[in-house]
Length: 157
Length: 290
Ligand SMILES: Cc1cc2nc3c(=O)[nH]c(=O)nc-3n(C[C@H](O)[C@H](O)[C@H](O)COP(=O)(O)OP(=O)(O)OC[C@H]3O[C@@H](n4cnc5c(N)ncnc54)[C@H](O)[C@@H]3O)c2cc1C
Ligand code: FES
Ligand code: FES
Image 1 (tube, rainbow over the protein chains, first blue to last red):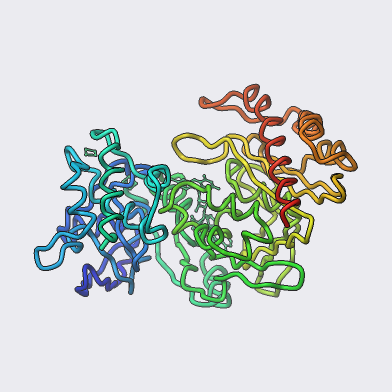
Image 2 (spheres, protein in one colour; image 1 turned 30 degrees about the vertical axis):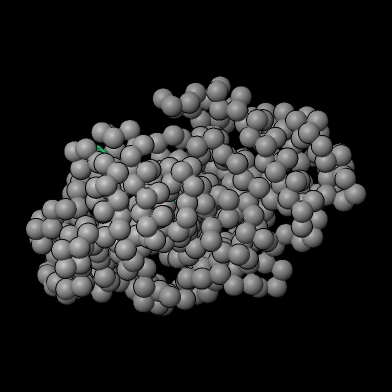
């Protein structure tokens, strides 16, 4: 019943035998111990589980681990390089784009996706770009400011 | 949430998918997974096997085919929304694809999965019915082309046979002087259509020469609004005619309107003329631009 898979996670190949019903988010959190990716709603609505799959933002609670076989996944643990936060991480910190931080990994990938397709979004476009992500703390104002700041600083990476 | 266990099979060609379908009765095809995975997790579906068609590259991409665009079944909503060809020749479809769910849903969900799933609240069926699109279904013995208006037959039911796979959707391109548009009353949480309206209008010297309209979201499956079409054909392309024609949508809805905890049938029926009018006005405005 189990299926062998190999996924490049944050640049490192990870192999395992998994049940086909295992979700990508469960593979990341429970098999690999990468708990930066969160589970909020578990019903594709809140965006807490967002990661990059081959460079594109997806909700990992709505993707089977077997569907990611052979692909490259980036999680929040893989965004900083050599201890240096990415522009988006830095901007969320600077602009106080978080309170409890539960939504933040997903928000950062939603913002990453937006800046990938639209490097200079207006505040309204930022709000639409974050439509699939929910935050129960901030009221979104500082999240929008953080994305604006990251765009002004030259991008997502 | 955990789905019930199932066997995972992967197809890299249509022929392999057909072979796996024949060998595994009750198996479900998996495309983007953005309707099927939620159903599996809720255990509303518990198939013995799932056949992943994601790797079938021949089902992906958008290409011109005579006066139409052929959109492969595995083309994502994001790719449809971003396509320059779709935006110029079938603006309503680009608009509908751009409004599906949220960006992450559009990155995974596919046009073939959307229509095969046939959720009454889906956006794409309404557009495909309005634009006279056709669905290319491939069975083990060859393919057939099903007009969109005949493809959707009920709530989550289609004319697709158990052994058929949607390979592509063929959408006629708008010519000069023809415009199309899709507008919806989006559910605030999911963005699914509470009421959706699609229109294609040909404007000739200020007159609506040809009119195609469909509604979805509030009826069991997307359907043409022929009373609206008749009422607008030959009329001047102006606000008063759009409003008068849109009011006729009541005749097209009949007694078939769905209601739920979010929006009653009465409310949806009252909203239908509003969205039909907006779709007509937007389509006619685009006809002037092309
Ligand atoms: C949070 C959220 C919000 C959404 N909002 C909207 C919205 O606003 N508007 C909207 O229209 N949709 C919406 N959707 C649905 C989305 O568009 C789905 O992606 C789509 O309905 C199914 O496409 P899929 O590729 O994900 O199909 P899957 O989930 O993989 O498959 C769905 C069904 O179709 C069958 N199938 C798939 N491909 C084929 C094929 N080629 N041939 C035959 N059968 C096939 C499968 O067996 C399955 O039964 C939303 C989904 C989510 C999770
Ligand atoms: S946990 Fe995946 S969208 Fe909420
Ligand atoms: S910071 Fe707490 S949910 Fe967003």
